[in-house]
Length: 271
Image: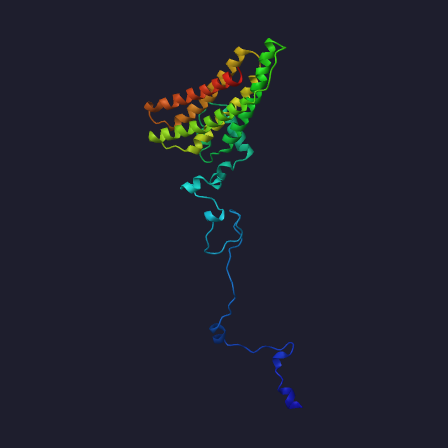
């Protein structure tokens, strides 16, 4: 009986201590974990891809990361322009106020570190609907002043003309000056030009409400003052990119174009 009990393996008993394995045997055959993969912690939340594998590609264009803007694939990617909409309310309000003080000419230095396209989109869109709606109201007030019994109808075509003229001006004119100054050897930025011209249109939003006054001579005074302020804002800030007196024609032409836009708004939408 005693010999039979001694032959039972002690490793099956609860609380038994396993045999000691030598270091040579332990290192000779290390345990392999299938599918083991080291990961970085904390997860990279900048591009929304969660945990990133060590040594793996991060921010790949095919995985939805930000596209580089130094190639054509990045130019046509929406993710490349998200940084230009990363502005808060205080920054936008400060730039709107600066656009109403054209004599300083320091707007370019304010936006140098962080130019935005939010102002261009928001101001242009607001101006389109403001001049289209208030232009119809002003036409009604002027017509009813001369003849209260006149028949008047809302002109929906104002919206089409406003969208084509404002969006076209805010996009094409800065693009033209960008290529012109690059041809003249100046170091310019297209995004900064779009930002500059976009904020220059803000004064016309405020002016449109004053143009509801049914007095023609007062309307002309208001629009000419607003046009001169907006034109001075653009030309004085554009002057920072002009190096010689021979290229001052660029500044003068920008002033004339901005005045032309103000006169167009008055004659087409507030006749």
